[in-house]
Every structure is written in structure tokens, then in C-alpha cells.
Length: 198
Length: 63
Image (cartoon, rainbow over all chains, first blue to last red; front, side, top):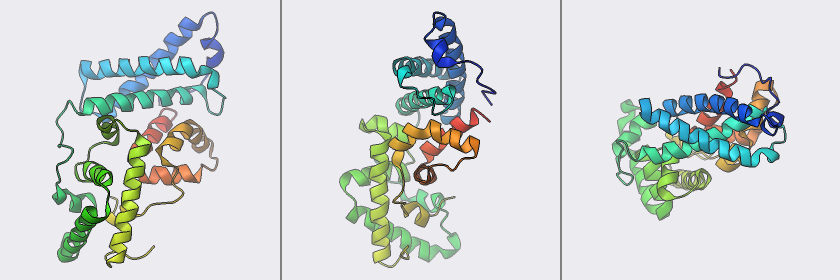
């Protein structure tokens, strides 16, 4: 647990004459959270992780300062501020991902799928037919962008935030692209008799 | 582990990443307080591992 209580009236402290001390205290809390989040996501560590955590914290604080008047007390203040750290950590991680070892975005390693979806090796023939039908559906029913996102996310396990960075897009747009792809693939697999209707 | 069939099954009530992230701080407080959480966000967190990880992180900050 990072936070036990919230004794400080943060909005007031951050707009008071002593706001520098309040910002310093908030910075320390956000930095601890950023370090933990980056450590959980990435293979990086040591000074590199610390540098990214400092960058994420500084950028989160800029957003918090700008949006402070929008805080409506719908949650505890620190819960609200931690969200800004998550946004920044996601951005930094998405950018940093491409500097480390990774599968190329457009590689197509279909052999990973049985493990990823727990297809039963004792029902090898059935699994093989299902995968063949899925592959066929990916080729035939997806748009170019849906196929690209499906291959990157599902076959190559590229993190969503790294894809956001690479495609200059947003989490929501990529999620929606994959959502539509999932729906279309299911419809096709139902139509050809590999899955049952819902 | 998620099956291929459940991966391909979409929930029409899914809130999507944008709305989920916009309301995640409120959602976390609802969960911590034992209030009924927004079902559209619940549906989204079931289908989106990155947003679910963000939820876990925010929840973990208070637990």
C-alpha cells in the first residue's frame, strides 16, 4: 500500500502560499507510484527506470497543475492524481518498448496461438481446423488496419501502449479496431460452423 | 487463460478505453467503498488487459 490516509486538503494546499512544499510532497508520492508502475511493466531497471519515472512524474505534475480547477472531489485527490501518472507511464513505456528486444510488428507467428488461447493438444485435429479457419477469416474479413492491429497485438504480443506510440494513435482507437476485428472474426467462425451462436 | 472463443466474444456494453480511463478514479473509489461499479467499465476491464492493469495499480495504491 502506498497510501494509508489522505490527511492533507490537497487542492487547498496546492493553491496556498505554501504550495511549493505541497507540490514537493505530492511529487514524492507520485514518483514512488511511477517507479512501481514502470518496474511492473518493463524489463528496464536501475538508472534508466529512475529517469523514466522522474520524467513521468514531472509530466504528470504539469497536467495536474493545469487541471487542478477541474477536480470535483468525485474521488480522493490522490486517486485522481495517480491516474495522471498512469497516463504518463503508459506513454513513456510505449515509447521505450521499441528500444528493447521485441518481435517485429508485422511478423506473423501463428504457432504462438495454440498456447495463447489454451487450445487442447489432445484435440489436435479440431484445433488445427479452428486455427486454419481463423487464419482464413483474418485474411478475408478484416480491413488492412484491423489485420495490422490483430497481428501486432495477438500474434506478436506487442503491448497496446507501444502500438499507440508506433501508430500515432490512441488506446481507445486501437482497442476499437481490435474490438471490431474480434466481432467480425467471430461472426465468420460462427458462419462456417467452428463456433456456436451466442 | 482466455479461450479463443471468449477472446472473440465482444460485449456491446463495453465502455471502451477512453471512458474507462476518464472515470477510472471514480470507479476505483466505488469498488473500495463497496458500491455497485459501472457495469460498462466492468465489461471493458474484462476485455482490455492494459486498462485492467491500470485499475489494479490504482486500487493497489490504497490497499
